[in-house]
Length: 231
Image (cartoon, rainbow, N blue to C red; front, side, top):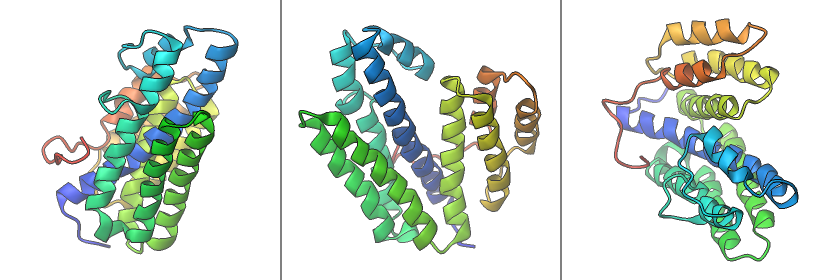
């Protein structure tokens, strides 16, 4: 097990969260984009509400452009990808250059999408490169706790986003069970009571989505030690 500083443990955790945020929000955006075009022009307002981000957009066209690519919008997919990139750059020694390269390729694909006449096609390459990053992390990162902290961040973010988007109960349960198995492997301090409560809620027929969001966000607390990079 690698000996990690608090700051690098935090960066690994947020690398997992930001990469997952880009992956899942891009997939959700593509789904909502089709709905906005075909059915409901104001669908983006509901999307923002579910994500708990301010609806600062003036039209579906404005939303489609700024939510994806506006570097001055802290909630944009571009901004979250750059946070993942900033953390990955600092963690080059821990994750390796080959693993880092797929985050760099995702940034390259995002920049191409920004100037493309068919951005959804290029944005799919961002999704593909994030998935390749996770695969390379599994294959090339030797230290188990380094891999596990990235995966912990990924699971926390996925549960958070799935609950906000009212994903199917089976999807939420699957992620909670995977999170429960992952967190002891990280070497991080975590709230065992949160894990117990999440599994208790997962066993219910009807899921309490807001409480799941609240609980999973309190599993790991880096408040005292969070670095400037990537936040």
